[in-house]
Length: 174
Image (tube, rainbow, N blue to C red):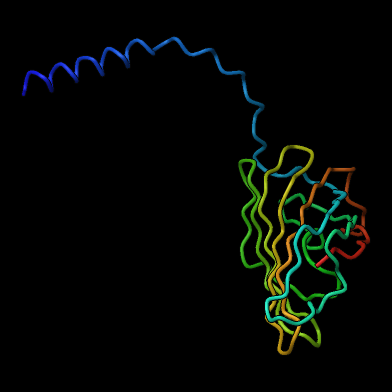
């Protein structure tokens, strides 16, 4: 029995060694940006999911398939203008932000006047001149109208930020 185990181990080792060096060389990957390049970004978004979570009509003017274009800035210190991810009129504070090594993850806690809480979160990947992200939004309103929304974003850097700090933004869907 011990002889069989040794034979199997020898066969496995030979198979592993046979595979060494036989792989085709992998193409060089583009270097990953350490952080988003400061500047102004144009962000296009499309709502890909909108569902009620309380069996009432979602309390948002946004509809499935809505497309938006907004602009926002990435500051020299790496901070991202929330206007890229949140709805106009929501009062938001960043809860967490990770923008490093080609990955982007930001979460906000927002209040919507007259309604309640809104929780947008964006996760995606970025390169030197843009990013792709999925934004998910959940609500916790005082009354009816709670919903979950998903929006796909694509952003590209279009230049330097205006001297005022941020560009005027059109409302983001959500």
